[in-house]
Structure formats: C-alpha cells, structure tokens
Amino acid sequence: MNPAVSLTAGPDLDLARFDIYDHAVQDDPLPWYAALRDRAPLFHHTEHDYWVLSRHADVHWATREDAGLSNRMGVTLDASAWNEHAHLVMSFLAMDPPETTRLRRLVSRAFTPRRVRELAPTVERLTETYLDAALARADGGSFDWIADVAGRIPMDVISDMMGVPEADRAEVRRLSDLLVHREDGLRDVPAVGIEASMKLFEYYAGMLAERRRRPSDDLTSALLNAEDESGRMTDSEITAFLFLMVVAGNETTTKLLGNAVFHLARRSDQLPEVLADPEGPLVDSWVEETLRYDASTQYVARLVTEPLTRHGVTAPAGSKLLLALGAANHDESVFTDPHRFDVHRGADELGDHLSFGGGRHFCLGANLARLEARLVLKALVGRARHLEVDEASAVRFYSANVRGFAHLPITVTER
Image (cartoon, rainbow, N blue to C red; front, side, top):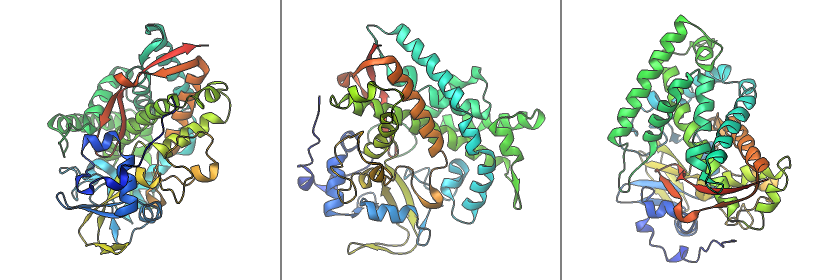
C-alpha cells in the first residue's frame, strides 16, 4: 500500500475547531498543520486562550529564543502542570537561564556521551530478549510491537542506567505510562496520573537515600556526585531529572519505534529496500525520516514574556504559546514533498527537522533516542524478511504533546 496524504481539505478546515487535545485532530494532524501554516501561522485558540506557531522559520527561531519567551511554566499546557513549580517535575525543561544552564551543565557531567555509548550492549541484549520472546509467542508471526518490544526497551534502558532493580522495572513502566495518556476531552493530568507521579517521586527519593548509603556506578550515583563551581545538585533537582527521564526518555522513544514501523510498513516501495540490508545506511535514514515525518513530540510550550508579533498578528505578554514541531517538520519551504514518508530523503533536509528542539533547550537525550531506535530497528530488520502492520487493530496513544501508538499489531515473516 502506498497511501498518498491528501491535504486538499486543509484550506476548507474551520480553524476554530483546531485543538491539540481533540482526538480527531491527533488522528490526522497534517491537514490542520497545512491550514495553520497557510492561513494562520500565528494562530490564536480563543476558547482556551493559547497561541500556536507552525511555520519552520518561526519555530526554528522560537526554539532558540530566550528574550521574550520563557520556559519557566513548563512545556505542556495541562492545567495542573502549567505553573511556576513545573521545574519540580520537568527539571531544566521548565527553567530559564542561568538556572537551566547550571543544571544542564551538572547533569551533563553525569549523563555523558560515553555513558550513552556504553549502553549499546544493554540495548542490544534487551532487544534480543524481547524480540526473541515476541517471535516465539507469535501466532503466525503476529505480535504487538508496542506491548511486546517497543514499549519495554526504552524504560528498561533508562532503569538500567539509573540503577532501578529488575524486579521494580515493570511497575515503574506502568506508572510512567499513566502520566501522559489523556482521554478525549480531558485537558489535564488524570487523577491516576497524579497518583502515579507521587508514587514515582517516593520511589526515586528512596533510591537516592539508598545510593547515599551504598554508592554504585549508575547514573543516580553519578548525579549525586556531579559538582562544579556552583556546587552539587539538590535532592529535589536530581529527583526531578530522574522523573523527566522516565517520561521524556521512555514515552518518546517508544512512540518513535512505533511510528517508524507503522510508516515504513505503509511504503511497499521502500519496505523491501530497508529490510534487504540490516547493516546498510537506510536504517539510520529510516530513524531520521520518522523523526521528521511523525515526531513523538508534536508541541512544546513557552510563556510569552514580551509581545510577540509574527505575520501581522501579536500575541500579548503573558500568553501561552505552542511551538508546533510537527507542523514545522512538514513545511513545504524547507522539505521537498514533505507529506511523503521517504527513507531516501537527503541528509541536508533531514538535518533541518526540529523534533529535538534547538539551542540551549535541545533535547539532552537525543543521542540516546537515536542509539536505541537505530539498534532496535536494526535488530528487527535482521530478523524480518517481511513485515506487515494490522492498521485496523492499531490503537493510538492520545496525549496533548506526544503522538504514537498504545498498541501496534504486526506480522513478521522471519528470514
């Protein structure tokens, strides 16, 4: 199947009906994004009073801008999360300079490129374990790519890095899943999500106390020992970063793995090429094109601190502003045939996607996400002579910011 994405409805869409919390919009956002870029590049949602930037040039600028735009209220518009205490759960994502600079510097002393590279054997081992088990249980080669593989590996990698015991990892994964899912019409963290966050904070506080008594070589101990001229991180700062890793590092990578398989399986012209060579460069291109075409994180929020004028429209100081990363990644002025999923897209264009943000707020976990995606998908290609996705049985995951699947049944024909 080679489905063509039709955006002909874009000009006719009633933008008054656009809302990031609407499941119908989340199901098919591309026509909405096209309409926003074309007709309202700085869009105001009057009912819920937030603004949206959607063109690549504007979003590129905003991800790197500090004057006039602030992170101090966090990166999501969820009612209970948008406040000046957001840093307690979002760490440096909810800070401005100089605080974010100091904390990222300290975290970087523990969360080093070397530590990420050294995770490769762990990723490979976990992938082999879960993929082998899924294929062994598969009925006719069919299994749930999310539940059996993609939803397990990122959380286990992070837990392994933090030093979470294997016996606790399933529960930590379950709690993290409860934090970001939104039922249709719900504009805030559900009660089960708030309860899950409290349990996670309690768990990580206990883990910190244990590491003080018995230091290890894991990330948690490294964070406790990280120090520069500003001193060391406080316990609340460390706990917030661990919490951020669970949400940002788990959910987004799981969704990346799901989106990658879903979109490649729809391209009957490209699927055989990728599956033909697990060691070839197309796996890397597959990862990057997925990041561009269907980013796990579709939006990040900012607080407007000085009036923002773009395209003859002004968002006043105090406004809630969304940077529509997903819309920017489909901007026709930057990407050739942007609504086509293409693993042959040139490196120059792939280098322009904004899925990891930019500037001082560029995603600290980008290298880890790329490492995991590349190794997991390479392993899948190494086992699959052919694969198909059961689109009719796929179940979307709904969140204001995150886009992907909760369940993605696939059938693998092994080599």
